Length: 496
Image 1 (cartoon, rainbow, N blue to C red):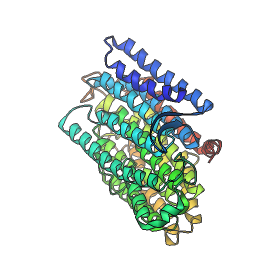
Image 2 (image 1 turned 90 degrees about the horizontal axis):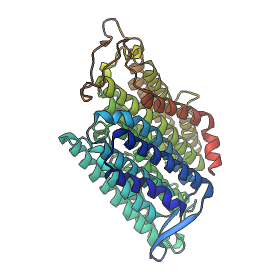
Image 3 (image 1 turned 45 degrees about the vertical axis):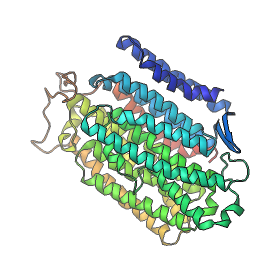
Image 4 (image 1 turned 90 degrees about the vertical axis):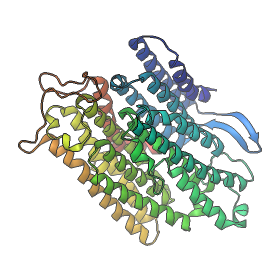
């Protein structure tokens, strides 16, 4: 019962907050209490474990929740990022209209993501995954402008299309199952049923990987991501990139490693196509980010590239590849979540949306720019930050994978992408702290174009936001350092 209460609390609580008729301080106190109580219940559930079946639809088709190693990792990353972003959003959303609507769907999507992490079988996972899509669309179209509505619909259509592709794989896996359909490392499908029509089975598994990979922004279903991220409020962008997109990764892991079994598709065209699409997405996303001048859109293309690092690691179908992918999942949630919050600070305090407006900003926002720099170094892969450990693990899995020429090509792609990542992130830091003469931005009087005058820089030239915004960014930087130092131990404790 504890598992059910844990994800239902933020869903029901978020819905009820829409009916609250109270002043801002009391509303904020409710938000804080709801966040911390959800974290507390999740912490207890992580230790208590257990399993609960809510409904029975047909033979071996149940709505069941439980927590295994993967679920624990996904749930902890979800709770950490949502908690940090919630405090940040208390200040940021002051410049947005209808903040109560944002927070309602913020908490509802929080519960949906926890449900995805706790899913014990493909049917439960799929229903939770669809609920996540429906509850995050309002976060994208929050501003209700023409561009926001267009981006929200694009996100919805891509997500539904990808989910239907994933549903086809879910149906076929259940068709090829003769026993219990509960997630099991190594898979549970009946090899005899698969062999009856092996080619069709493999094709449908590949379709499922691409379908669930839509949420992760993998080519050719990546188009929603660069459209949605720049339009959504910065806290929503941080969640979409940091953890919502990872729900697609979790579903792919569940489909391949916990349902079908890696052994059944190792060495087949499914593995080669998966690796090829992942490497193509890595290169394409990095190049698009390198050419982009709008800060949040540059970070969105970066997300397209970086999440496919995870997909590439998974595609090696080895324990080391899985570990590398999970390490990158954790570090990317921290580093990219931080970068989108930093981009939100630039908008909230100064109204700056383009990277060429940030020259000299380091003198006015040293804390903010140091957070940007540390998160960027992690994405590039500089030790001892998390990005170095995850990329090292993925490259090692590639060289040990025995996938012929792809085993050599994969590390080359990772290096090229790392160079491009340095090319579109580090110049921002250099220009911010060491602007060329005459290029430093104005020190006073800049107001946010969306903040209604409340985002004016202080008289002493400082433009740093309040601790509500700076502390979450700092904690996320600490998070990527912790992944670099202790990530392998954390995964070991989770059973990987």
